[in-house]
Image (cartoon, rainbow, N blue to C red; front, side, top):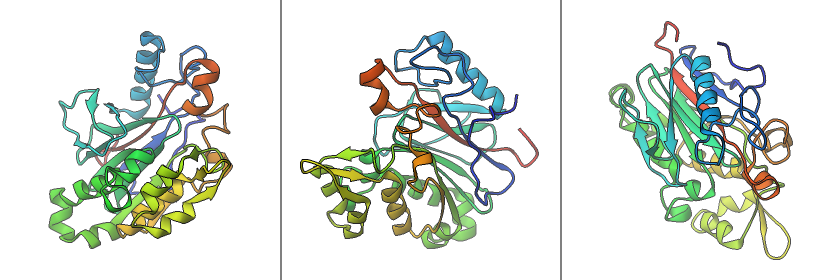
Length: 278
C-alpha cells in the first residue's frame, strides 16, 4: 500500500534510507467526529476503527509504527523489537530498521529528527509543557532529552564524539500544529519560556485580557538552535500548517472537543528502511 495522497512527505535533505511521513485526517475508516484516519485509541473512537486505521498505516509504512502513551512529558524511549504499543514516553529514537518512531498529535507539534548519514531517527511530541520541561526555559524539555539520547547512540559517539559535532549533523522537520494566531495561553506559559531565555519573548504576541498568542514552531526552533541545530524545516507558522484552521485536513483537540465531543489524532512517523527497502 502507498501512502494516501493527502498525507505529508517531509521535504528535507534526509538520506534516502530515512523515510518519514505525517498522516492527515484523510484515508481511514473512522466515522465522525473522528473521520476518518483517527489513530488515537484513547479518544472515544470505535476500537475496531482505530485498529483498522493503524493497520492501514502499518501497511503504508512497511514497518511497525510504535504508538506511545504520551503524557506531555520529556521521557524518551529507545525502540527495540519488543517495545510495546502504549509505552509511556513522549519521544522515541530508533537506530535499527523495522520500527517507526511515531507520535500522535491534534494541536501539539510533531518533531522528526535524523542525521545527515541516517545513523538514527527520532520523533517527539512537543506541546508547550514538553517543550518547556519541568524547569521552564532553564530546564530540559523533550527536544533536549531527544538530543541527549541521540548523542548517546554508539554510532554517533564513535564517529562524531562531541555534542556540537552531532548537532551540526542533525536534520529536523516540524509538522502541523496549532498556529500562532490560534494558540492563546496565559502569562504563566509565556513566563515558563521567557524566564532565563529572553529570545523566547519573540514567540509570544499580546492577546486579550492579559493573555498571549504563542507560536509552538518558533519556540521549538529556538530550543533546537540553542542546541546548535541549524537545519530545521517544515512548519514555519503559516496558516497552511495550522491544525485549527485547516479543519478539512487536520484533527484539532482545541477546535473539535467542545464543539463535536471529540477529536481524533493524526501521526508523524520516521523510520530506517534498511538501505534496501521496507
